[in-house]
Length: 483
Image (cartoon, rainbow, N blue to C red; front, side, top):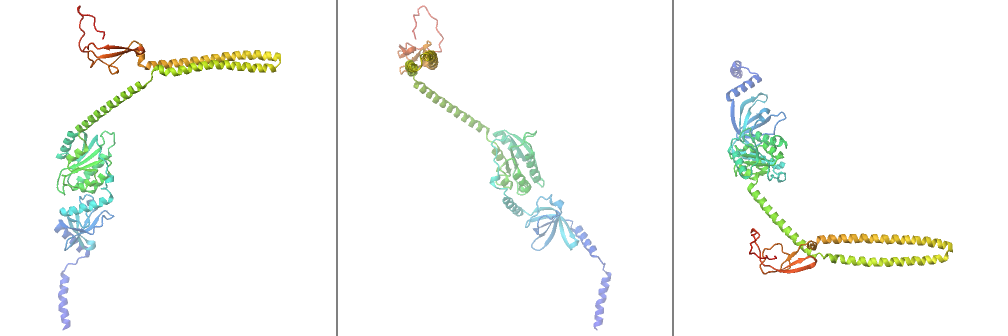
């Protein structure tokens, strides 16, 4: 009974196995691959990235997409990875677009991703926060690396869309405040190629040489109008942020409206809430600068006037303190006379002493020798006496000439020398010199100083206005006033 049971079960099995097509492993694997690719083709899959360990040495990227119930292997080929707007990151929820296929080598199916985008604002913000922490750790946001904005740049480079309202607002504001030479580098400010174009524009401005055909900007403004997080995402890309950090030219970021914030605002040297505000930061108000310069000029002129008046007052005080010429010469002249008198007496005494010594020596020598020496001594004494007197006369003459020269120099500096040439000084009641007749009244007593301290008192008979033409004399007119 047992044998019959086994034969009945074995027969059907043999029949079924004989009717089924026999596949090799490769045939079955590639058949499944064609079925999956033909059935699904391009698909969009939403999931969280897991197992991402960066780019493989081959340039390809391997990871998986998962949700709470399943897992799907994924791969991004090297040529596609470099063109992706958003790069994969561990834990980021994304929407992947690509072809569903299988990998026969490990009997698994996978998606070959051709396009990758974050799944909603939450994913974007998570990616943004992660990138912000990474760049902050590298020091790209440090305040000590930020460059000062030039006070008045000669050339301003603007990186923005050439057709939007942003460039018109910037140019209009610059024209109102302080017109400057503006170079516009047109770029796309939204889309997959926007980040690369902005980065290339920043590098292009920095590559310009000073003094070239196209002037190198002294300041760069990166500007864009407002928009959603997705619209402004190009200014959160690493390629843009690293280009800003590497810029040798100071850079102002003016992306979005006042409430919009992108990572370029942290890396740039100055952040403007709007493009118009960026133009205001770039240049001062020309009218204010002119007013400030004029105010400084007025202050400088007033200071110079005060300084000149102070110097004039000091000079007048010094002139009044100068002694008279006679007082300066009197003491040296007295000393000169005294020395001249003493010199003559000293010469006589010296001659007498020499004679006495000669007499004493004469007694000790023989008569012939004495006579010879006496004669020779007399000659020498006469010669020395004559030379001494002549030298002293020359010295006294030289001192006399020097003293006369000093006297003439002092006399030329004195106003009394002017008086000796026929001029006079009119002094008021207070004794101060008068420069003109303004303020003089008839009957007022004045004094006229002449040379040699000679003074004459006069009385003002009347004044004549300087603007009136001289009147013709009439026969009836008598002798005019002396003043």
